[in-house]
Structure formats: C-alpha cells, structure tokens
Image 1 (cartoon, rainbow, N blue to C red):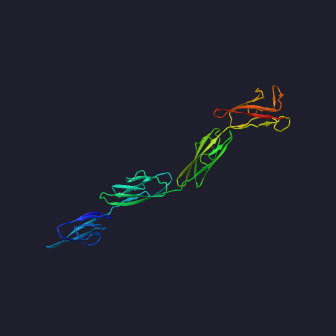
Image 2 (cartoon, rainbow, N blue to C red):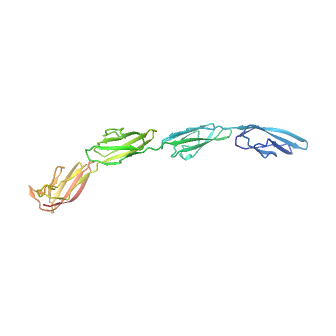
Image 3 (cartoon, rainbow, N blue to C red):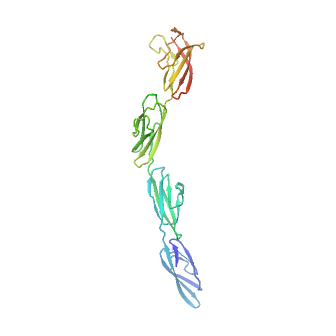
Length: 310
C-alpha cells in the first residue's frame, strides 16, 4: 500500500523480474519497467506482471488516495480603514496571499486590512503533506465623505453657524461640546469667543466613519481711514478706528513736528481735528501710532498717516 495525495505523483520501484508490465493503464507513467510514477485520483489497485525465463507472476500495490480538506472562513464586507479576521481549518500549516494587507502571511487566523475588494487565498498543508487551497473574499463598503467649511473668520460676540454635509445618510457628532447649541446635529451654532477647533464625526448606515474639522479664528480686524474732513458738514467729520476682535488699544496722533496732539483708547473715541483745549488743527498730514492687544494679550504695532482736509 502507498498513501498518495490527490493531484500529486509518487514513484514506486519493484524488482525480481526481467520485464515488468503494469495495469490498468490509468494515471501511470510508464506502464513498463521497474520504476513507474502513479497519479491516481481515487483509491485503486495497480497490478504488475513480473516475467523472467521461468515464467510470469503478478503482484499488486494499493494506492490509498488522500483528499485534503482545507476550509476557510471570514467572507465579509467591511468599512475602509478597518480590519477583518480570516481563518482556515483542516491543515497544519497555512500560507496566505496577497500578503501585503495581512497581519501575517502564515497561521490559521490572520487579520486583513485591504484597500480594495480582495480575494485572499490560503494554501494549507495537512499532516500527510497534502496541499489544498481555499479562498476568502473581503469587500469594502463605500467610504463616506463629510464636508465642512474648514475655517471661519468670526467676530467677537457673534454666534457662528457651522454645518456639515455628507454624500450618504448617517449621523453627525461634534466635539468638544463646549459652546455648541447641538452636538448631534448636522448644523450647529457656536460662540466660543476664542479660537477653537471643532471636529465633526460622521457615521453612515454601514457603520463606516469619516471626520473633518472646523477652525474658528478670531483674527484682529482693523480699518483705519486715510482722510477725514472736519469742515462742519455731515460727511466724514471725525477720524476714528473701526476694529473687531481686539481686547484693548491705544492710538496716538502726532503733528508734523512729532508732538502728540491726541490720544484714543476706546472704540467710542475719535479725533475731530482739534487739539489743546479745542484749538483747530490746520489742513495737513498727521501721523499716528496704534498699539493693540489681541485676545492672547499679544501686542501689535501699526503706524500710518491721516490727511486732514477742511
């Protein structure tokens, strides 16, 4: 008796005769001679006639065909960026491929993290040395997308509407919850009065997730005109600073000789073109220096000129 794996070949050698004839002539090569190769696909007997000058005798060999049975498990559909566990039974050693997206190319259990729909192959070798192959299919759900306006330039004290949208139905979650009107709404309202980063997480109906971020920025905003006309009409009669997102400021105004003639320290302050107890300043170019502090107490300095025209 010989034990042979199905779909494999095994050689057998005999002796004692001058010539040898093998039969049946099924999956055997050659069918004469002392050494032949057997490739049976089912259990069967092979017979050999041994012949010499004294005559012919017959002997036989039984081919016990072994059928390995490798089974694989784990066919599934997963979200992009996640993993699936694949397993196989029926063997002693296992080789998985393609190996690039597997936690290990060997072992009866592996973790797969494909970036595309992938059919994984596992080759198993059982205790008899027989080889069998099985397959596991891992498919991917579509990757959801969550879209937001990534940066908002906000004004101190205003309520900012921030919204998220997606290409598929699902749920939204905003974090952190500080200063938000709703943490599980697609559209929410924020009023942190300081620079803040909000993250929105989206989960679709397949359990797949996507994230995005919204940065609220409170950059200082300053507008300073370059001309004013304090000529007693209703148009442009005073010079003042228009600003937002500033914690405090000081503006000094100087004449052409460098003498400070006016100071402003509040948003309501202005210069009407006078100095020193209501004296009228002549037409001309006056310089100014602005020092302001943002919300983080960081000082900033600006300088420029203002044209006084009567």
